[in-house]
View 1 (cartoon, rainbow, N blue to C red):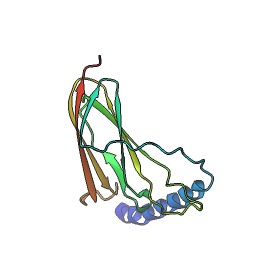
View 2: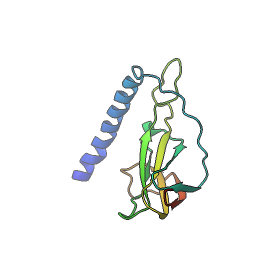
View 3: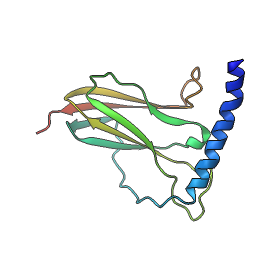
Length: 141
């Protein structure tokens, strides 16, 4: 019974979020363009440094980039942020919005950051895309 309720409720909630997001798009201030960052899979950082990568996405479809959980003693910390859609003369609901992934070095060592592009509620489905970064963290100077 609960599964049936969820199957009906989740699509309506997501549709509502899409409408709210699109309504907010028209009043959102323009974001300054960010310089393109190298997109290599091997990253070397010193403790305290961060690397930013931008991944293409379209969260209005339900697909989002998420980082798989890292061990508590990981050499890095990972955060993700959905960026505003590209500025156009007329914002369009459903426009692609890239995801900014920030990898911050917290202690010397190595880590593998695995990201998946999937719908969070589709637990039994394979992700649409995956991305992996191999990180080496060196001591700060």
